[in-house]
Image (cartoon, rainbow, N blue to C red):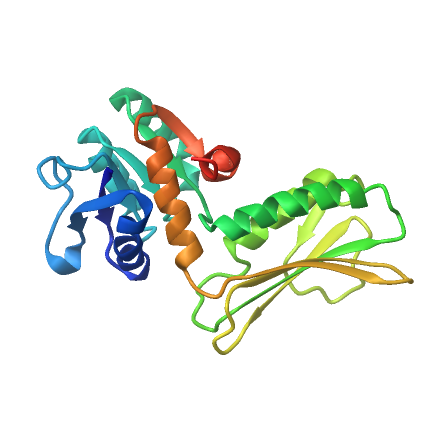
Length: 246
């Protein structure tokens, strides 16, 4: 049984707490300003791994405090990747392990792999043009989503004739070297991402729809189990194939 500390007690933190006993994890500490607890050596002392799901404003400071306490961690908060080099120094200096990612959903990371394989194949079929579409509820704060940007990176990596991801409105014809990725925000739409391939003869669509946050919480718990005795910093996408078999 792996002992975990939950940093941030929002929707993700509460779901991690709920699913932890079913995934070989025991919650030994919950840290959140709302319940007046702070990250200190004594508040995380019993934990093997800390799971950080807070806000972009507080995540770097939290990583610093957890690293100083000598605890391995999983970071699901985004908005700090421009300071990745600083975090790498912290991890190495304190001899701990960290897994980070923009999307810990098991299903979405499987989808990334499917899109990667498919776009490599479709790159050789000139009859098809590739496009992207994502839809979310109207409370989502960013557009495009971080997941849409990852999908775009995959497409651009695998398509020889696509050089630029175009997320913005364009008052002109789309250029042949542009990969057009549209975003919709409305109502209570669950997170939906699609990569499509269109030709004169037919269309092919790959789509992932998230019904809830459960897949994200399960991915974070699997990452916690994986990083427990490891050192160094890892991107969840890069180690996903190892994590799903643990």
